[in-house]
Length: 106
Length: 397
Image (tube, rainbow over all chains, first blue to last red; front, top):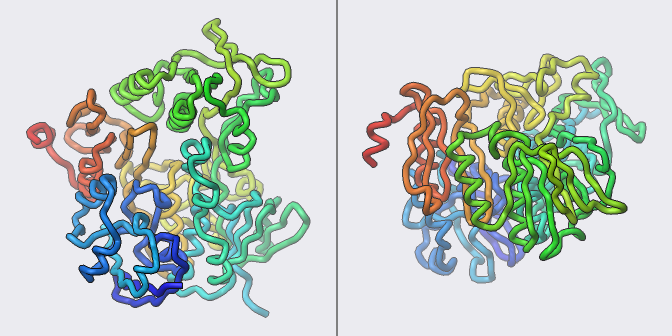
């Protein structure tokens, strides 16, 4: 089990626990996190699971974004350097302690 | 006695979002979701894409894992069909005879494929795509080098054709009208998709209505109104859907091409709501009552209904949007193009990367973006904010 802290768009903090091997979107939806609609279910089509990873080290540990994720993120008004789509973030032991901020919905 | 639960009919995307939004809003009473299928609620869009050809496992399409429902006290009654609604007693009766009382009832029964009922339709190897079990019964017929006929050239038909082609089948699409996607898009986009499919080896025949399925035990050919016969080791039919409104009609609710609701998901009974594909609602963008078949529509209506049940007004005013994946073509649609009188094309159709901007006079109505997420996002923002853009400014981009 790893622990992940998720801060929703209203600033409420949610402490979650999950098994490794899943993705961040599933953790968010399983824990009723507001702001993560995950409409396309992880097909990287809808950009409704947009999050920020504020810690540069944690961000780097997540690896590179795919071209499709880049493309979807690139045109969101709310995009920052540390943006990710939660459905594309796979969780391993390295993500224990990860802190995630959910982006405001556009 | 504990108050009666909120009961949702249909174990769908809409119902799961409803339950999610109710819990997010702090509703702590019981929630019961009744679903006819035996499976946990799942994403339906992959049925005509990756799920059909088993590129993803069913597990990956679940909306939530099983543990989610227990953790948030959401009771699933699966493999159970609601037979009737009694408004006098505020309860539903299941096929088994069991009754469930409700404090609020939410109808999310979706839509079912229009059945052709043509001669020979009972032959093996012929099917519709509405649920996971449909894909399972068609699966044995999906074989490299074998022939498939897809009846219907709408989005579902074309997605299915793409999936079968990718699986190595010889694919023919039979479309009854003059062009594919005739009901939903412009001649330009129809022509683009026809070309894209032909280029990838799919045979597209228009003005061609299937009239009979021929074969001994399993299907062997499709006889067509144009006099031709098309060999088929399997047939998938996708000629549109009808909203499942029988329960609502029987209960005396207002129904007119979908269950009539307002912007909060309310029917004409204050204790009954309806959400998703089965509803007919006032659209903020078209200024008319419409019915939509789409996940974002189901999700947004579920949010509005859940908010209203929890005492908060959150009218459904989100911009309708859609997506369709065929081969490496990612189509994203913002808005509804009904009533357009002009189109501006940006980008390059030859390279399969462009967008079509639909106007009525000077007003932007909708955008079809193919492999052009940038244009989709921009259009979605403009349309959501009620803004337009001049054709001149577009053309200069």
